[in-house]
Image 1 (cartoon, one colour):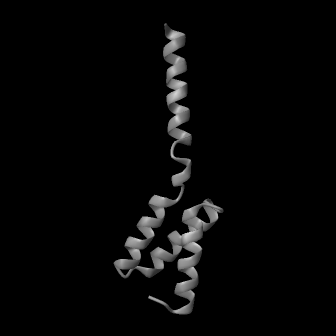
Image 2 (cartoon, rainbow, N blue to C red):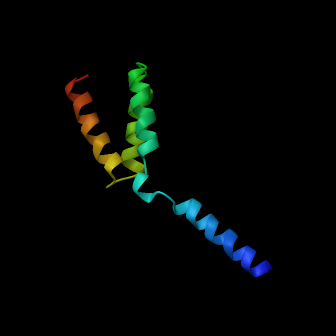
Length: 76
């Protein structure tokens, strides 16, 4: 019985660590967008840069790269 409980805890832990892999960076992207709407562009840019570094190749990174290009061109 103890082994079963230990195994279940390990499985739960692994699921928690790996969970929602398709969502990587999404929450941080939403935070960056919020910061931008609050006119805190400096913090938003830091979050955007972090997304590109931490989650390359993800949809969040692609959206971030697009937004950074717009910001660099001066688009609101």
